[in-house]
Image (tube, rainbow, N blue to C red; front, top):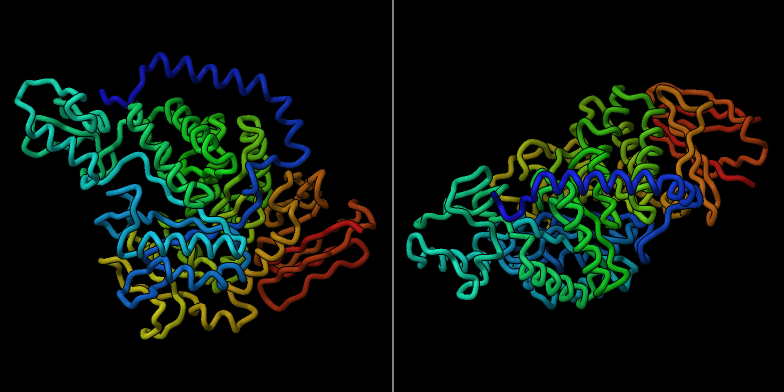
Length: 534
């Protein structure tokens, strides 16, 4: 078996310990959650912009997005209201996506130089924007010097001889076997196989190796020393395939290692799985795990807007997440998102929609608690579905093919017909997707309890199409949020909340008005009302 895999009995015993721990801490954690979500360092309640580097903005005319291109757009990013960016991998790699790393200490030349990266970090920090680096630890590329050294050693090793790490320490960096196993690829020209769960050109690291863990410590220290504010961890459920306990323990190692270097280092992990597994992994102490149950096609947001879930269930699910995750890690920071570089663009989720439903979806994402993430181009409703390259199409700055900012796009990308106008046009339209999302982010940033409070459902107002909830906080003013997610106007009696209720923010996807008179709230289709108290 792979060196990554643990004894089943040991895993079951450890899982039982986790369940017991959760039961013992349940009452105390519940009490802690009612007073507002505790946070890790300064990375609380941020609004984060995911940038697929090679497709964002081209500064030198070679067709590839780069670091200087991102730096040239920081005013745009900041003006939208984002105060953090997550950059997809910037390390050297032969692939366009860079999720197979050749050298963890270098910058891919197509993106710029190390000095360009330093300049981007400084420019971001000068604007109050934090920078989260994508850290790919499940595997490397086959061109990584570690794998090349191990491969060369095994090619030279006489048949039948046992490897000796005193001759080649890199043999221990990967999971090699003389037997063909599921998820293993043949090392051509030898009798050996190596684990490569995703692709033969992405050999999996042996994360049980102390030498590998020491390398990871050094990598983290290097980039944190440069000023990186945190890491987005790729594929955390694949570190030890099918073993949640081992994955959780490795996350604990990563979290403790990062914070021993920089106590304020923020870490968010990609756990593409169900809520219960995410909750188990939160016992590692990791700051955040992405809210996959809410995201993408088939996620709670899409199902609610397409009528497959009641609006009240959206509120129930937010409350359940806060409860379950808070039990596992009272200091967790939620990480809601709607789409990312691996998912179809959201414009394809609602074929008949000309804007209102798309807008409401992003409000549902951005009005969740924690650090909300938005994939570049979603702020203008970009299209892109099917193969991965289509989901990573160039940022649609304008429809001018000679616009120097526009990238060529990933090799093999299909021609994409955009559903909504380019950014240049949307910035002039107060009813555009861009204007809506900018306004939603403004409201999120204006009322800290939206991102930092605890959800409390208002049952008397919720129904199939209306989601209504308080966001409670002991340190910030409470807010009441009412969302009409349906395609028909509604009236709601809010008199039970008292005469001190003030309609402070109104968001309508069209020009119809929201009114609040003598305790009665009247809302057009696809609209949002936010209330504060006098």
